[in-house]
Image 1 (cartoon, rainbow, N blue to C red):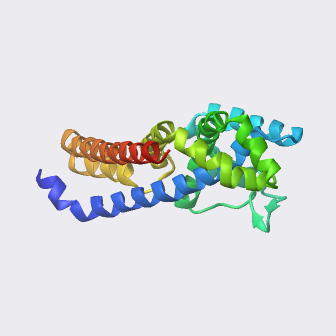
Image 2: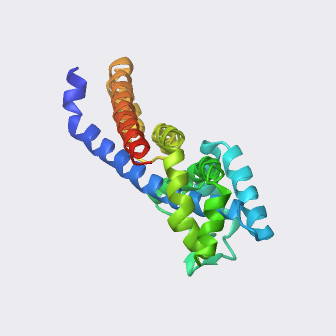
Image 3: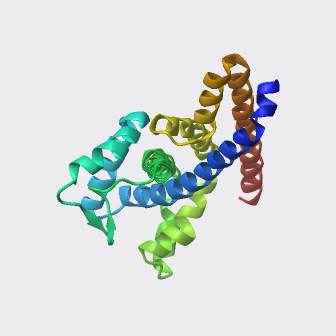
Length: 228
């Protein structure tokens, strides 16, 4: 127990980085996943093909491999000819490790968000969509005001499961050297030769965080169900 108290500030800082990683990655994953889910149901075939390929690739490549490829592969692939998207360099540039972890978690998790949200979009009644079009809603208006609110309400628990899985996946950032909670726990355990105590405390912290998120998800589901 003494080792935990001695390194409490270090663990606190690392846990703060983990929470920031969760917030940024989840926000990005929901935004990207929503766009990809909408593309899956688009009338434009290239959009559907892109969405299917996106989900098929990023959902099936292991997360640690994506982390390593992003950090060490992209700079090598584009070392002579960097690629720019919206003015931002994508290939041929080394990104900060924390930024890399956020980007990879967003890409990986958004594929699962898209599949989950697509199932929610399929629950929207065809008659409601037709009524919205009759009232003058375009594709974006239909998604924003009719389809997406119902889809999110229908998949609160499944999306919550994706979130909790992503929380656990933040530990993979330790693979590329991000000083988040798991990385710090491993570092302290090695330095102090207290593997059981340190990792036992880390397990408790992750379990408590998961339980807290689970309680929040259950409360949100009940609120949404009551409003519906």
